[in-house]
Every structure is written in C-alpha cells, then in structure tokens.
View 1 (cartoon, chains in turn cyan, brown):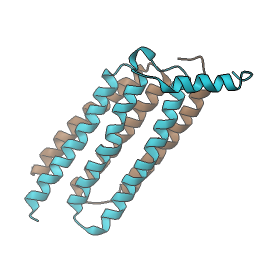
View 2: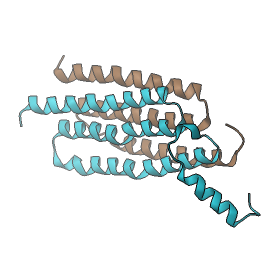
View 3: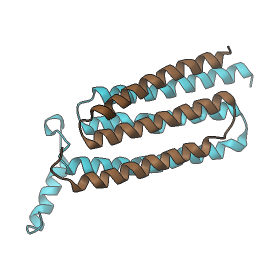
View 4: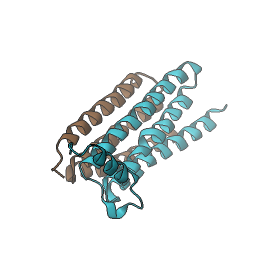
Length: 122
Length: 91
C-alpha cells in the first residue's frame, strides 16, 4: 500500500481515538451521577485504545508487532470490566446512586430479599 | 511539517482538553468514586498519548509502559473501591 493511504488511515484512527478521550471528559463533566459517568469513562479505555493501537500498527507496518498490540489491548479488555464492576458495586453500596434518575432498579429487590432471608445480619 | 505532524498536533490539543476536563472532575469530586473513575480516564488519556508518540516516531519502546499503565489503573481502582465499600456513611 502506498504511504499516503497508510498515513490517511493513521490520521483517521488517531483523531477518532483522541475524540473518544474528549467524549469521556465531556461525559465526566456533564453527566449527573456516578453510573452515567462510568458509562462515559469506558469509551477511551477500550475503543480509544484500540484505535490508537491500530494507528501504531499501521505506522510500524510489520506483522511482528501485531501480537504485542493485541496482547496490550486484550489485557485492557480483561481488566477494565473487573475494575468497573468493583467501582459500581461500591457505588451502589455506599448510596451513590440517584434512584430518581433510574428507570428500574432490579438489584434493590434482590438486596431486600437477601435481607429477609438473614434478618440478624444488617 | 508532514501531514502526520499536523494530525498529531490536533490530537495533542484534543487530548489536552480531555485531560483538563478530567483533572477538573478529579479536583471537584463530589465523591471518592467519581475521582477514581476520572483518574482511570486520565490514565487512558496518558496511554493514548503514549501510543500517539509511538505511532509518530515509529518505535515500540513504550508498549510495555502502556501495559503497566493498565495494570496500575486496575489495581488502583479495585483497591479504592474496596476501601470505599467499608465506609458506608460518607457520601
């Protein structure tokens, strides 16, 4: 492939990847509560990083770096959901949710039922 | 300046704006977990800037740093989330 096409694809990947970061920052500033801010925060962590690594792979243009880039991305893909789960769980338990903004809270019924099963434990 | 240089300049401006917004959220809060999420996004922005620099200069020296960065983000947010779960009354 010609260098101009590769550079154009790289440019598109870089600009889109950085716009993901900007979208996350705007989401963090504008969204009202923890859960919706978490939704915004995942964009640069997964898709943004993928686009940036794609740009890197295009510029380096050799097959030997592709597995390394893939490992870097897969590692992020494995760790981000776990930490997001932990943060969301802690946020629910410490009353960071705003029930008036939710359209449904299925976890509330589960927590209530679990509390009825074991009345001695708060 | 090459086309890619101009693009990287634009990317630097966008990432700086994103980092500024994220740092504002870290400073303002209002809660601990909001700050954790904002710090995670700031780490993602650092990773994006590292990848941009590697793409511009065509080397892979900082790729290990990128992986380490995601490990640090993981350990940090899990630790703070466990810590926050123990303090029920603070909001």
